[in-house]
Length: 214
Image (cartoon, rainbow, N blue to C red; front, top):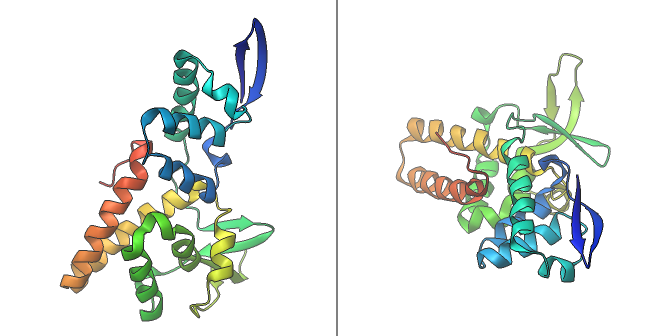
């Protein structure tokens, strides 16, 4: 999307992201972190991150121009695709979302629990690298199998930073509902605490988009 800004009597044209699918997980984490500052600082950092407008020019923008740009970004967020993407592709490699969370192993759950308690906002790449793994077999009908979990996710976690933000958000919502069901089945105190931790983290992450977890 192109944005025209009038400066010194001349209109200059800059590029703004065209849709929320242009935002990667890595960039989205920065946007979430921007909320820790003032509203003015958040607006400044967000515009710089999602456009090619120079930092100095952003500082000189009139508030009405900032409001227009932030409004366009908010519209993009609201129009994002919220459907779970079971298969994604990063750098030519296909990854599949865990095909059956009800059969999740103790090792997978233990690591997920650890990363969530450490702070979902900080550990999203690691969480996604557990939920999404390389596809080892796939049929024309869409059935697939993924790599067995071995706990060695450091390299894949770095790759997951290139995921599209809306893919991450839809996966988190799906995973959250799975945890709610698991809680009802296990009825354990530890799972209840994890559920509350996930719910709070989800609210913090999705608040920027005005999403809910009903």
